[in-house]
Image (tube, rainbow, N blue to C red; front, side, top):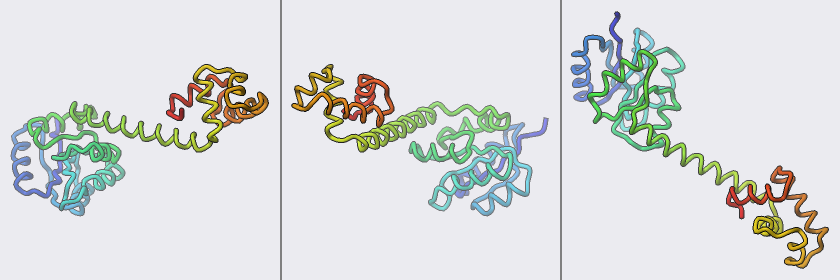
Length: 217
């Protein structure tokens, strides 16, 4: 079996040297190149047969590794594993969106060889700690999306319509609402029809539930 060909992209020379020496002790892994800059990394990955790229996110104090990962994902079949000391959820999500197949903290040094093997076999599991970070970030983004959608929907409704929705959700009938707000039943029906169209619902109770679930009332 051919050894797995690995390219190291790391601007810390001491760390890169130590990683290269560590991987050299693995009988099925061969370091075929080392790069310190993005330009050098792209030249090597395009001119050599590379199976796996071990990519440092921060190069020259910038998250250059994320941009490089996106370029590599588009230009060749090499799998990219991110190596970083960063645990920020946004950075981790950006790395996977760029095309990384795994994300390892540098402190988890011993896990690197097995991560390389898994990437080469297209079987990269997401590190448990990183998976938790990703789930938290997805939850945050989902919450932002829901908040935005609720605000958009709320902007479609008039204050009177929001008030009527709240009364419907409280269990009042249209007649009760007319008496409570001292308006005609016809006016209530007109408001309800507008509400149903805006919220794309067929019943006032469903519309009221939707508004409550979205935080509008």
